[in-house]
Image 1 (cartoon, each protein chain N blue to C red):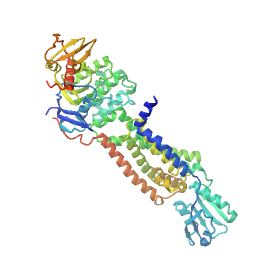
Image 2 (image 1 turned 180 degrees about the horizontal axis):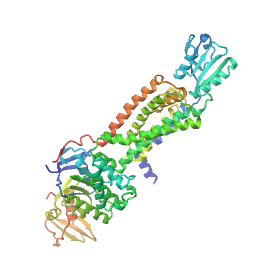
Image 3 (image 1 turned 135 degrees about the vertical axis):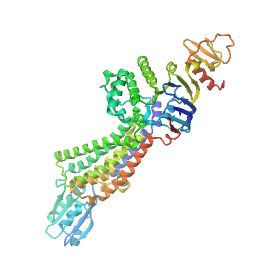
Image 4 (image 1 turned 90 degrees about the horizontal axis):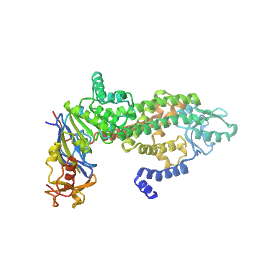
Length: 342
Length: 272
């Protein structure tokens, strides 16, 4: 029995990969990346005493901009656009320090360090004044739900067609492969969109999460992200013969997104040796968009980078996966050697 | 141009799954492709419906809209009812609502599924599900009907009903080609082809194939040539190219005996 089990395991490459890769992934993530502590906080120092003030800040405040001519408006703008996590505005006594509450762990570290300065500064936390974890988590969870439906549910739906032999039926019908693919994917796109709206509204009602930005920008980001995860789902269906295999494969795509997208551990706390993986994950970019739009009210132009990356991913992953799926519907030369009999 | 395949070969990876096979499937005729597992039956049928690419030869088939296909599974959607399955397939083949309603009602009645038309396909018995799969393949009234082992795993009564449906379709002018592992079914076809390792061993009307079988088959308790004998009931049958040296009287053979003889001769390199 034991020998038979080992033989079967040896030939089940996905399970072997899971047994080998999963402990390594967990070890790396929890060994290196699982760190809620933030060492450096990007900081802008503005106002008439900016030059003098920047030298008085504790070391963890990484000054990225010093502008004696700028004031409170510029400080807020920098935080909305996520160009700085903290903005110190000098001129009044005490100086005002604006902290971006949507970057939860940076904000917590900043507030803690600033409190140690005593009454020398007036600290104001924007976008998440009470530093609620739920405010940061809900926008990320929306992405996770989209990823789950797009990747797991879609791949299961497609693989079930193959397992039952009904994909074979669809393939011989006088309909274009694109019609089959569109017909299969559209319901998941709609369902994921409904789920997204539901979770967003529930998050706002139950946890008082604000929605400060444009719903259009948010929907656009969600649509791009959905194309990426639906593409992953379609791709997984093309490399899986059974529902079990598709779930196993989807797990490989989902787990890193949960652990490394910045949803749980702040990206800034993940060492670069691991962080580069974060930048390959679509959820990393959707989280930047959803947190930016919902909490900071970030405009579209300030989110150009996550939008650009998600657009590129959507084109590459979705088109690639659909073409691959299409090939399984119409094998290369199946239409050659054929004549229409009269 | 008649429907069928000419000198068809299909290579799946390193395996020549169909090797230089020619088969005509005329309208109004049931053609049975017989063979064991791995004989190439499914590959031949899948090539006919465009699911695998031939490596050589010609396939003459009607346009896809005029082909009906039932894969080796029933091909039904388990979470749709009988009517919903038929409606979906009918609409995919572009049937008007009126025509679809007429065809659906006719087929459901012929197949004895009237009382089950609101039942999910997953709740049907194996035989009923197979009949539903057959109705789905027939709903658009195809010129060519391709059925991959429709009766495998189906109870004897349902098999009889399935054959009644098949015969009715052929009588209406449909060219029916089906794969089967059951010799008794093949004997009911107008034309039979026996496949072995992708090659056609025998082809013709069942009676002609039996009549043309070379040599003699004898019944014996102690076969002398194990390579040319097989168990039959509680004794053996043995093939001899001319006559049994022991003077055993030849027995009447059926299509199954003839197919076994052809397979054994092919395996042992006997040409004629």
